[in-house]
Amino acid sequence: MNDPKTIAEILANTHTIAVVGFSSSTARAGYYVPAYLQGHGYRIIPVNPNITTGLGHRAYPDLHAVPEPVDLVLVFRRSEHVPDVVEQAIDIGAKAIWLQQGIVLGQAAARARAAGLAVVQDACMMVEHRAWRRRG
Image 1 (tube, rainbow, N blue to C red):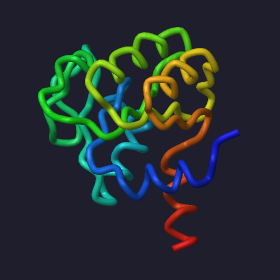
Image 2 (cartoon, rainbow, N blue to C red):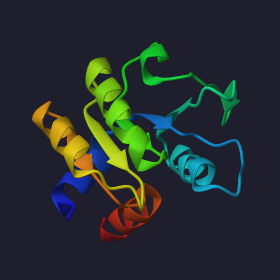
Image 3 (tube, one colour):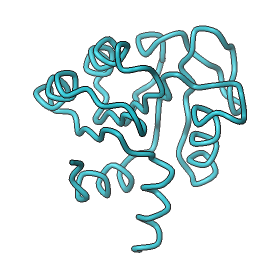
Image 4 (cartoon, rainbow, N blue to C red):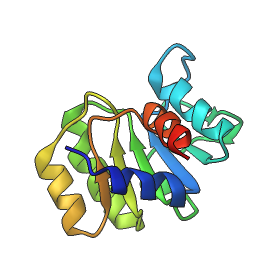
């Protein structure tokens, strides 16, 4: 279960989001969720080794290649890839990691929390953002 206070703090304090598993397909959540977030003022950094740009920004092959500080790592990858993403998020000093709806990995989440990152699992950031805005 995600802590509503953690979700609210992430949404309020995040500025730069690295999107691991960013998709170039507009029909996929890995595209339209970051597009929504960008439309609401968040800076999006696409992370996908198979593309060069996304939403008008340069894409990077992995988190280690991102040349600027990242507040949040938003993950659109299958569960088996999450432990490596968590390790990279820790390495780059991200403040939080958000595993999109359908992605749950207790051990990796525990590792992230132990390293000081805020963690949200199995929740759509776009849905949570809309609800947070309605609450004011």
